[in-house]
Length: 215
View 1 (cartoon, rainbow, N blue to C red):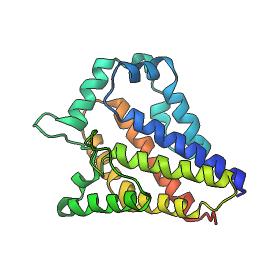
View 2 (tube, rainbow, N blue to C red; view 1 turned 90 degrees about the vertical axis):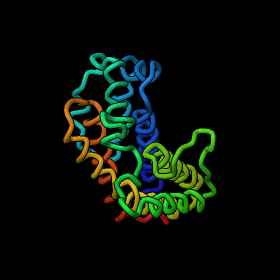
View 3 (spheres, one colour; view 1 turned 30 degrees about the vertical axis):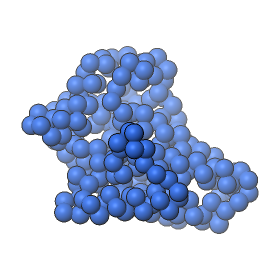
View 4 (spheres, rainbow, N blue to C red; view 1 turned 120 degrees about the vertical axis):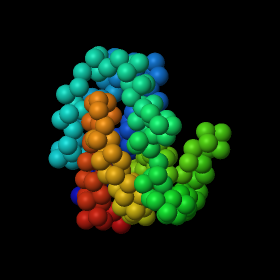
């Protein structure tokens, strides 16, 4: 893989991570408009398939965004990821919820990754270190840094390796568990399909990174 190829691949990964961040936020009017009128899912499809055409996303790509009512998306998000029907969400969007007794260890490990690259959590947002959005933002940062370094003809290996390690140790550890729980529930075709794409994408990226050298 040439430096230009690697830079383009990192750019597509960075874009995909950023789009996933948006899609896992609580759906508001702005996000709904991006889905229904601005081709947000098309952008995601282009980005993930540019990384690897084997990413499994047929169920998501076949959804018609114009058929997605904002109220239904909001109800599904709350039911699945926020409070659920019994006061706690059946599919929490944080890795520690799937780590059992190792919950604190999961958060501490995320913080070590962030601190190593000079990053700190936004205290005003009250984000947890192992929340899905936070982890995806970190992966977006790592891949974006690779683009910059490769374009300047510098080695991006440390960021590339960090992306691999973080996927393996964090997101790919708990995301499949969340997807299993999600698929046990009724309805919510958008979030089920979205989570399937994210899991497939991260798995493919992890395998590609493991056999690629960017030194």
